Length: 140
Image (cartoon, rainbow, N blue to C red):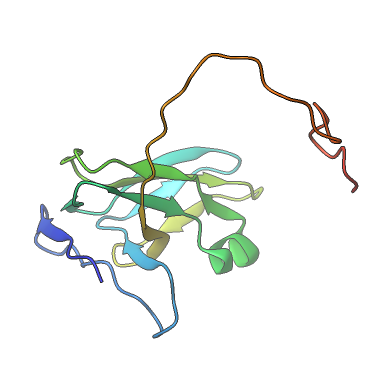
């Protein structure tokens, strides 16, 4: 388990929480009411800032229930270990009706993951059977 420091930036902000012992993600909560317009998007505040240790990142991911029931999804995002601002979640409403976010609603998930750094070298790369095929190349 990795220790992540959290600072409340708003008096009613909730800390990230897992909903079950086996959950990989920690729910992020809205700190204020707002409307996500139909077929539109908006930033939702969480009222918290986190300090991830070096070598870790935070992955913001959508909540499947919110997408299935209401057509609202959080955009994937990366929180770097040196970021210290408020966590905000970009929400997109795919539905034909406005969606009302209420303070305290679960709006996204946060997954904390280790980071592997790469060193890139310019050189010729070999071919594979797949080659450059992508975007559905291997099947439906």
